[in-house]
Amino acid sequence: MGTAITNARSSVFYSVAFLNQIETGPVRAALDALITRPLFSYGVANQVNGMEIVKPSGEIGMVHFASL
Image (cartoon, rainbow, N blue to C red; front, side, top):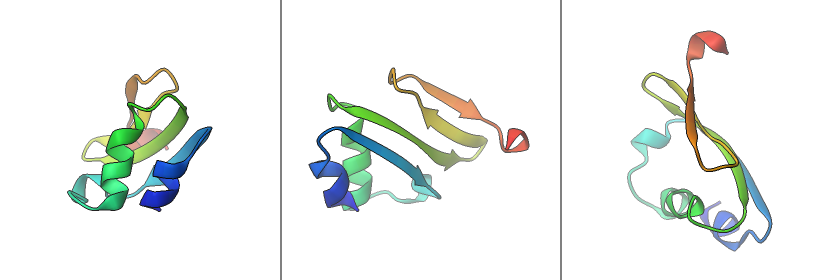
């Protein structure tokens, strides 16, 4: 999965459970680097207080689990 994210050329859509528990490895590295790449990415990853959403603008928003 990390290789697929790294090799993406136009867009990446993702949803990752427990991303905050993944501290190392190719998937974490690829997702951390994704926000700096010049392509469209959109995804969600759960956090302690809810779901963190990375918007197309790069801005990060939170959606609380109660809203889901």
